[in-house]
Amino acid sequence: MAAPQRSLERFAWRGLAAADRLFNRLYGWRSNPLYQSGTIAVALLGVLIVTGLWLLLFYRLGTPYESVARLTASPITGNWVRGLHRYASDAALIAVVVHLFRMLAQGRSWGPRALAWVTGVGLFALLFVCGWTGYVMVWDEFGIVLAREGARMMDSLPIFSEPVVRAFSGERPVATAFFFVNMFAHVALPLGLAVGLWLHVSRVSRATLLPPRRLMWGVIGLLTVAAVAWPLRMGPEASAFTLPESVSADMFYSFWMPFSRRLPGGVAFASAVAIFAILALVPAFTRRIANRPVASKVDEDLCGGCVQCTLDCPYGAIQMIPRPGERGSKSAEVARVNPALCVSCGICAGSCAPMAIGPAGRTGRDQLARVKEFLRSPELHRGGVVVVGCDRSALALTVAAASEDAVFYPVDCAGSLHTSVIELIVRAGMRGVLVAACPPRDCWNREGPKWVNERIYNDREAELQARVERRRVRLAHVDSRDIAGARKAIAAFAAETAALDAARAEESLEVDATCVTAAGVAE
View 1 (cartoon, rainbow, N blue to C red):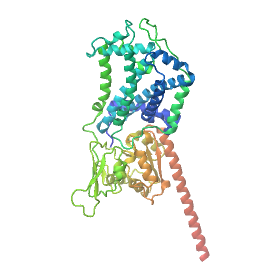
View 2 (cartoon, rainbow, N blue to C red):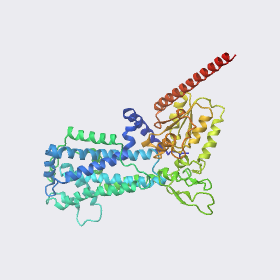
View 3 (cartoon, rainbow, N blue to C red):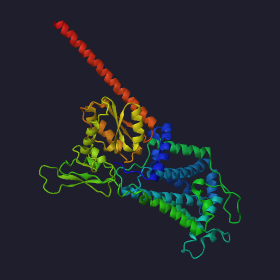
View 4 (cartoon, helix red, strand yellow):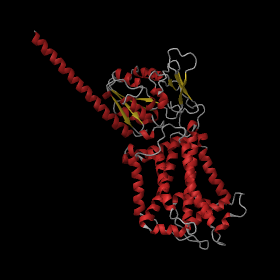
């Protein structure tokens, strides 16, 4: 079963669920940008690289402000490209924050997922610094304010022979070397982002890096329209001898300045490092020790060496190895689980036809024993609809099922559900089985909805047998706390299965009438 959430995760999840319901109503689960926050950030990184390379062709180290001003004054080749570059950087920062928040709310920050979390925090820091150096490149009033604030923090480090902040005091022109170093950092940091991104997804199989095309081009199109409709304007040139009353700033990259400027440089720098360090240590705060789910295990006597669990595992935690000992008539290879990579999602249990693998107490055989107990319950109303869904959606699905005269049967993840459980429920006389899975891009175990869909409808290994009437089985995607959406899906399926029963009853009556007539003729 799923590990219990900590109070911080529960608080974050409630806010996230409310936002998900709103965006699902606006866009539907297929186009909900909150489900795609990580891939949207990657797509926007691509936009930043392309537009950044174009802008770099016109940038001059000797005259930074003038070169940017010429770009801004060109509506065809400069202004909208620069606007898209800026708006994409803001949107990327928002997407990364949403993605971090989502992973925290879903408890996907500890154990084997800790590497993804820590590298994600590092990517967040790199993106922030990349935006900082980009604004300094413009060298307007906002640029020099950022440069001075950065220099003030760097002066707290005992690595420079003279204070860096003196470079912006006006006693001498700002050296071209400074603009070169700043530009080099701005160009080199995306390479660090690329390496960090590789590490970020290194422990997952079949990593999805881009959102669906429709959503991706929709986001890019909206940012392009914004760049044209609200063109950027140049602020006054940076000057060491003027103190403006106000500076036009980007709130996404400078929200922290009113706080940091009140602190000594060393304290401000230490505070920034501490904030990112605390974020990186979230896996230590949210990890479970006593409640940590155990890794999957393999019953080697039952394993047929079919490799399906290896193919389906979302985290590459299962490998095929030569079968140890005497093989006899058994397969040459057997599955072996790496506990360091296993997140105990149980998807392998649903993928194994002979039910030889899965976390303790959650293999296919354990699932069958549990569902038999469920079907023996005297309170179970025969002929009704059974809703099988993720136990994280238990609240919404229990309430929704009760309101539609159905019953909820929880599992760890829709992807861990063995299709024999569905067959057993249908054969026990229930009207139908509605499998309520998370939206595909929001599965807590990444690929649960994908694999259960393949096993029910496309004959993937451990498939739902042909003898089970498919009209009695339905897969629906339901948000974890969307009671209204769950009720709608259950009501629609219940109506369809009721119509099937009615049609079958009519057919039975027609057969009976035919038999009576035939008997009368025979007499």
